[in-house]
Length: 478
Image 1 (cartoon, rainbow, N blue to C red):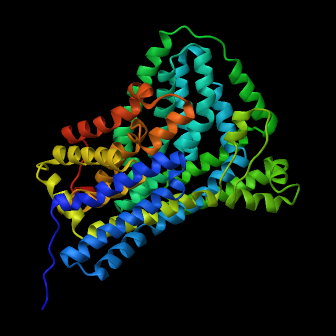
Image 2: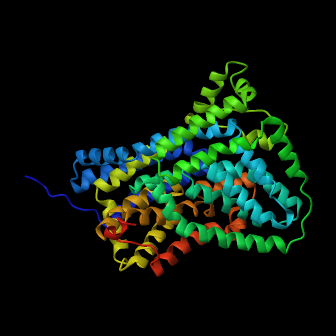
Image 3: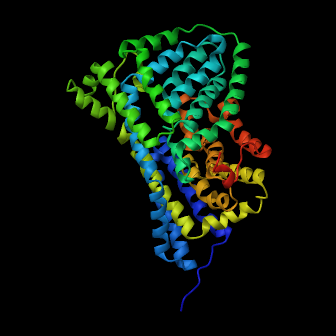
């Protein structure tokens, strides 16, 4: 006798999420910033098992359904995983070749005391866009900028707000960013199409933030810039800084503008940076290889961790790279999150929870607002931006499709709601990490993270006026 499958109620569907929240809270409390090294992944797998148990034992959902859903989810992010590995190689190559150090060196030349906050935000924008990492930007140049700002008499909340605002601009829009790639992949949106569409909400948010930071800087009495000279001198002494290095990001920008597939663009940029490392930084490659061959040093830059000793402790931390191997924790996390998402989908729990949000979706404005609210809730509940991005994309993907909206609207709204708000939550891995790195409590810098606060509000405002929001038929020719 065949027993018909039943769909779990919204209350029952929330049980795995509540379990996940509890386990993530315990994991983060126990492991701190190392939670992504394995604890969060185990929490996801245990929650996946609990979800599957509820579905199989109480709702007669075949185990085969779970296997298919999980397999489909993992295959859907296969391209993202390949891109992440290439990004690991690219990050190492860009750093050791001198591309990122040159961008920092020239970027610091614009740092004037009267425009310190705005310049800080812009420098972090440039570095985070080039590296795709807000954490690296904040943990390296962000610490130096915090010290400079304090010496000039700025409130630490304002400085941290400017640093985080700039750093998360790049984390949100850079083609090298893990969250950017993940949001595009989960919603099945081409990467560069996703980035281009985000500019509609992201650029106005950044401009407003820069205006506020500029106003504050102009009304503040500032001091000297000795530390800037020290960092610039340390960069110049360790790397062969030359404008020729800027060819690499320029070529990368041209490839992006010509809409070359992201894997090809990133791979070509990595090889070009490796070539420039051989030409401009041969001594550094020998140092990495332990006085070995240039070939060995170049290969180690691509796949492994590197560390260069400089005269400046902050700079030593800045130029350390992780290579392809450094992406494995993120890859592992994505795979485990895909298992959880697949289990929630196969059991019907995601659909059950989504049905609650659907009741409030009467038009574009309410749809985007519901997506923003859901993304914020998941950021609060799961305490991790990666998991929140994946769950938001999975929960609303079918709804956007059924109502005729293009996937890039969902991908943009997801990043507006999740990526930039993660450092504003004290118990989120991002909020906890940034507060620890900068030694500034989350609630102290939160009011000054203008970009992070404005972005989700801008997404709702753009939806309210209906600017460049198309149905699929219209979008085909856009």
